[in-house]
Amino acid sequence: MVLDPGETTTVSMKFMMHGDMGGPHNFRLHLPTNDPAMPDQTATVLSNWVP
Image (cartoon, rainbow, N blue to C red; front, side, top):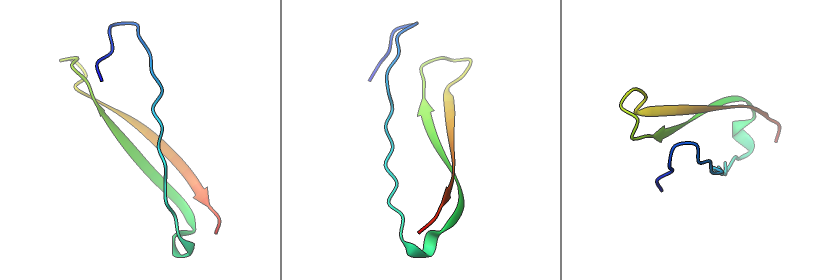
């Protein structure tokens, strides 16, 4: 997908967790861009999953 300057979109993520994965987690989603000054943007998702 390519966005023009000023254009926006929604990014969805889905996590599959299981009982042994309880507790805090730090996930990072890397979003490549065509901006030479910022070729990679990172979105961080912090969670504290309770099974």
